[in-house]
Image 1 (cartoon, rainbow, N blue to C red):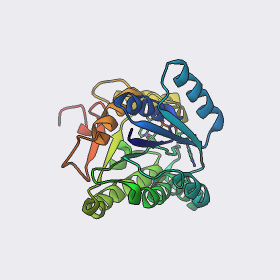
Image 2 (image 1 turned 180 degrees about the vertical axis):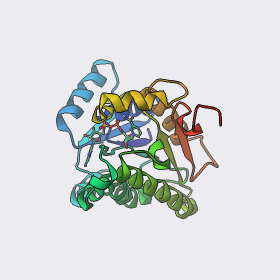
Image 3 (image 1 turned 120 degrees about the horizontal axis):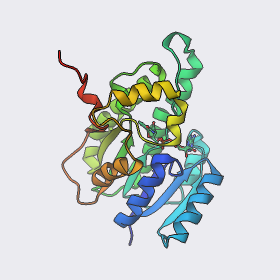
Image 4 (image 1 turned 180 degrees about the horizontal axis):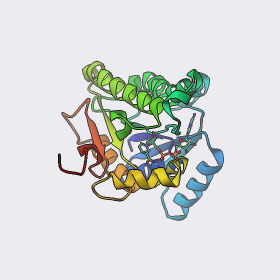
Length: 243
Ligand SMILES: NC(=O)c1ccc[n+]([C@@H]2O[C@H](COP(=O)([O-])OP(=O)(O)OC[C@H]3O[C@@H](n4cnc5c(N)ncnc54)[C@H](O)[C@@H]3O)[C@@H](O)[C@H]2O)c1
């Protein structure tokens, strides 16, 4: 039987690349997204390329009822990639409580709520990969996003400890700037300034993130849990100048 791999936000910029990669790795991929139009367009593209080992689900991950319906369709899940995320830009002193609530609702609570439902369906050797962000280390003008992704890293480490007893390995991938629609939330000036801080000088490709996810979700991957794999062109190495 083909193993089921679930990818949330699978119709988005990075999600699509993860979907393609896990499908080529041999998973039957459940693509979950709230955007019906993007899901349908991705399904059409995949079929036209001869890729058939997938299913699509329209689901708002912030709705408990929709999560119950979604997970109720599956009996076993080999890999869960919590990729759906929300991002925007705002100065620290302009942020109000609802900004933080929106960020936490998808970037943390939806991950916890899906994990809570899916982990009991995972066999020994199951894999969970949470897509965090290099920004969890700190970034200007995104305190709500930074805080939510740092919380996701904390949740990843705690889940790794508690789910180890079931043989489930939980890790995070922390992308740096990746060329996707999400980046359009940054002003052009900010984008250029950000790229200048990256040793490689360019944004990553969604496929770079998918490669890391493929490694961490692979059936043969073992003994690595609770880790954060930074896939960021070296940005997290710090300043580029001397001193
Ligand atoms: N693009 C980057 O540079 C970058 C950098 C670091 C981290 N990330 C992280 O990578 C992940 C994917 O980012 P992306 O650039 O592909 O974003 P994206 O906006 O292109 O895709 C996000 C997808 O999630 C879906 N989604 C949003 N809210 C949802 C909900 N409530 N229920 C179901 N689906 C929902 C959207 O419809 C969309 O298809 C996110 O977690 C993001 O924080 C991205």
